[in-house]
Amino acid sequence: MPDLYDILGVSRDASPDEVKRAYRKKARESHPDAGGDEDTFKQVTHAYQVLSDPQKRARYDRFGDDGTPGTRGGDPFGGFSGGAGFGGIGDVIDAFFGTAFGGGQGGGARQGRTPPGRDVLVPTELTLEEVASGVRRPVEVEVATTCDLCGGSGSSTGGGSTRCRTCGGSGQVQRIVRTAFGQLATASGCPDCGGTGSVVEDPCRGCAGEGRRVSKRTITVEIPAGVAEGDRLRVSGAGEAGRHGAPAGDLYVEVQVAEHEIFKRDGRDLWAEVSVPFVQAALGTTLKVPLVDGGTEPVDIPGGSQPGDVIRVRRAGLPPRGGGNRGDLHLRIQVEVPKELDSEQRELLHRFAELRGEDVPEEGRGLFNRLREAFR
Image (cartoon, rainbow, N blue to C red; front, side, top):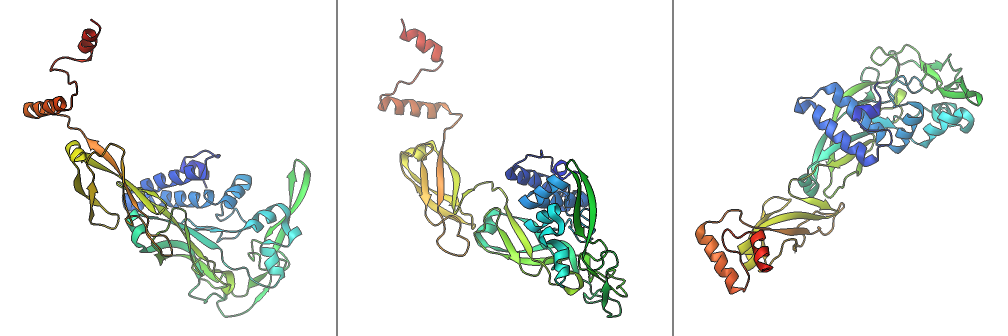
């Protein structure tokens, strides 16, 4: 597996925001719907799922463990391109201390229970319009699901299980690691029984005795209005299936919000710039401005408006997650000054300046000539 930082094109000390921006750029470039390569897109997604999670990133930086098969105790369901599993701080403790704290997969085996499937994290990008209204979003995940041939038992005949010969039923295997401080004994999940301490008799040909196998599926997620960048929505039981019929993990959908060509978000409030011709800015007018929900809203521009003035349109922003009053829309005025004038328009502006007592240079008299005359 290539280096995850190289996949996203960021340095190893990149901030979470830099990781997120790099992921968005790479994901858009490699997305199959945009003509990109599917394998590259999967690598980019997997790299983001590891590097966006502080605990998984710390583990990867220290051990090079990115959750893919072959990097964690031989667990063939350690992570997937369509949604990587993520664990807790217990994984990091186990990496240092093995069985000393009774954690990890071996701890579950000694207590006579099969650990549940892992949680799965999948990012999804929303438009600002979808944030304003809420949306039903189909999300594709590639995870281990309950085997349809054996119903999750792992056995082709419905038989039971026997104690694992590799680990002797402990669920863990020990190894000696040479370090700068000498030899260190560590323990990790048994690669043959997956940390459960037992193996299935007459393993199912569809799942090789796991009781689950990797497949793609599409889950429709209800995303409420008002969600923010980085929010995570949980779908209980939609994560990775557990081994031998153990409970499934959860699916977490992480919200990302695409940039909008008109509006900038500030919490529930929205900001936009509105261009006003200079005559209308001076005299006042009514303009129709677009709304994030669609349609337009008539807004009064008072006479004498200056560049940078802000007009607030109440309750035209975004709703809060969970209900409540919407935010406001703030319109920052930009005054349009015409770049080209015909002779009649110039004459009118000169006349206007004279009425206001303003000094207007004659045609052909530039700044240098006016300065020279001023010092005579």
